[in-house]
Amino acid sequence: MGIHTYFQSLNDLERIIRCPGKFKFEEHSVSAHSWKVVQYAKTLADIEESNGVVIDWKKLYEITSSHDYGEIFIGDIKTPVKHYSMELRGMLQQVEEGMIAMFIEENIPEEFKPIFRRQLREGKDDSVEGLILEVADKLDQVYEALTELQRGNTEKEFVVMYREALIKIKKIKLHCVDYFLTHILPDIVKESPNCPVDIQKITREALEL
Image 1 (cartoon, rainbow, N blue to C red):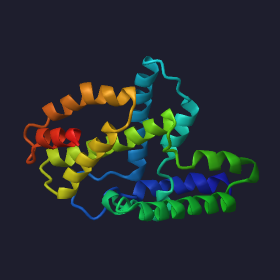
Image 2: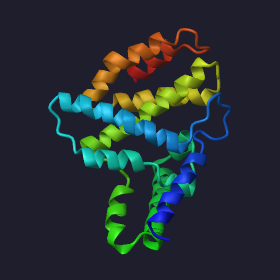
Image 3: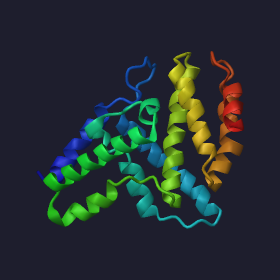
Image 4: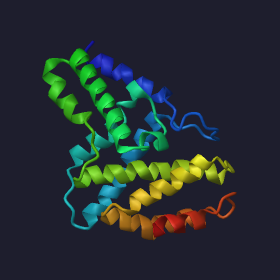
């Protein structure tokens, strides 16, 4: 019971593998994903600040480092499945939030419950920090899919993951998205000439949608 239970539960994130059920050259745990999302978000927020945007850094670190904690209870559900319909996505989010609320109620000391409710909440919203989280989360999908494609993995799901992540990033109105599209994405395409799929074509089609 208590904070120890929370600390101990973090080990579970190391054992939950992203994109389950598909052949992968490199496995990625939810824990590793969360760490990378924090790193992406940190740099994306620096780009926003360099353009005069005020960043709530405490909020940013809280929501990025904890954004997938709920997967301890429901696992990593494949993106095509959880986004199949708004109704299904809403139901999954409701279950996840309910399990987190129950965990906090049963295990966290009373004086820390408000803090944990804030830190483990759904962080993706219309605030600049919430939008940065969304971009960072999708950016890791880009790199996870790209790693597999570059190594010769022709599973269709990784092509879909790469394309869908780019489409979602492109639609978010932030300075860091403009920077990504102008300065980072061209390098991604340039470094992928030997992929068994045409990264340049897939990228171009995604940006035209």
